[in-house]
Image 1 (cartoon, rainbow, N blue to C red):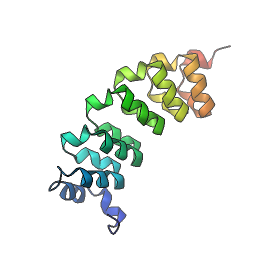
Image 2: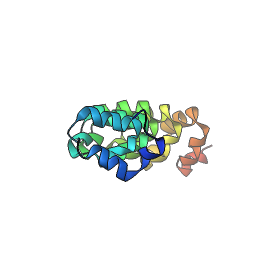
Image 3: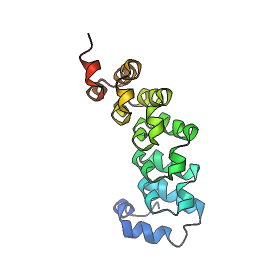
Image 4: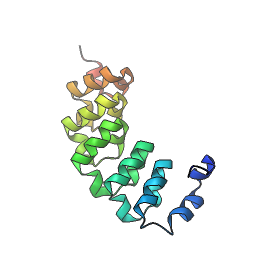
Length: 151
């Protein structure tokens, strides 16, 4: 992919033609997601369950997590690695993790703005909100109203 025009890496048809013949080739898929993380959306199901491939895709583009298999998005240990890499991945983790205080704390420590993807309960939690605001003052806009008016 060194010699490919970067604009072609975002062309759906080009990506599909590149990965279709070799969807079972793990190394090719790793290289594809290193170039364009969201190419994960075109991967065969086994690759959307593969931790190495999903990790590489998220390293390239944290929104690529939305294309990972649901079972992987519920894997707390693996998702913890990803939110420590990119807090914004909190947007695409399983709902149960968005209510897990320690998990959400890790996400907002990496990116305070990730608070916007936390559950309502976490947006009302003083410790979580303070940690998010410490990391990025813009996180305050995502806190529950009761904490913003807190005296």
